[in-house]
Length: 406
Ligand code: ATP
Ligand code: MG
Image 1 (tube, helix red, strand yellow):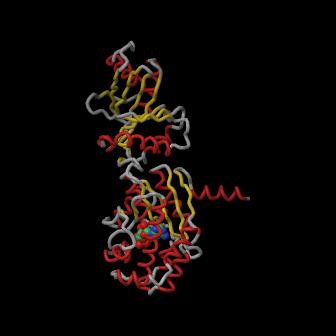
Image 2 (cartoon, rainbow, N blue to C red):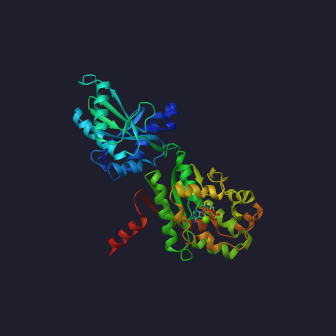
Image 3 (tube, rainbow, N blue to C red):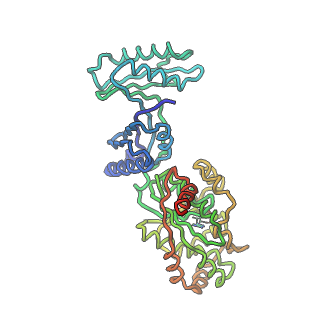
């Protein structure tokens, strides 16, 4: 395993952002730092055109893996740094080629020299290193045009830098550069994907999960937290807010006709989410609604539910087919968690036949049978907030807390 000393990062779309560029870069620096929170030794330099990480001995394989998930990065290259000593360069270049060699591979050495006081020029360096590779790696050939492997060598005052790979980043915009929103996160397939897609466009997410014990199990809550830990990979960490929802669901069940259970439940969820959004200074609400997927996700349903707020609702998966959503869920590794069988609060209280075309007037009328404000106040009083970080298995964390109590 090759150890790298630095990583050079190329910015994505943010290089187009003119005046805002500086704040975008600062945001990306913060996000990279958060993602690498357990490596305090790493130094991060956000320069105008590139970002550099000085790893100071940190495990480069882990760093390289984590960077794959940071939005706002176009691509990046791990770099080996040695002193201005051609023998050290030779040793590293040969090892690097050996680690990547495959049958029939072609290569070239591409040297740049910004420090002209170095005693060899670029042609000499190319020949010297090319010769060393040919002698040490059996079967490899030089090819100047479109080689399989290009070894980049840069001679600078502070040392000589060697790199070979350009790894594709996640693209998108740095999370947080587009403001903050609240994600309604169930245990299903759609909402984690919606959260991921919103984050990809620079939106910071706070996750809100409605929880109705004892109707919904401890496992269903844990599942929502584990899903949050998965998408936290894209921002470093996510605040997770658990909303006690049992009393509200019981009251709705008592007072509202079956056909409107779902609509009124959603309206209450939306109201509470909007209050949390305001408390957290969020600008919008993100959810996993997809048109026509289930009864609560028809246009008339959206009208009846959306009625309770003027806040913009972002629905990143609204026009995606289920298969398309599943494809993303697999890519971000939430799918297997999402299909675990633990029911969330909506499934349990779901009537056999919810109305696909609820009427707004009826929804308002039935909801008015509830003590809406008092119910919401009590629910809000019981909110629980926790920070879920990348690389943190939330079930492991929960166990650790439990052990602390013993
Ligand atoms: P998902 O796969 O995200 O659960 P779904 O297809 O099951 O979506 P619904 O159950 O109708 O759809 O929920 C629609 C949206 O409402 C969800 O995508 C999510 O944003 C929100 N939602 C549903 N249940 C909860 C919950 N228990 N906590 C927070 N948000 C929820
Ligand atoms: Mg669901």
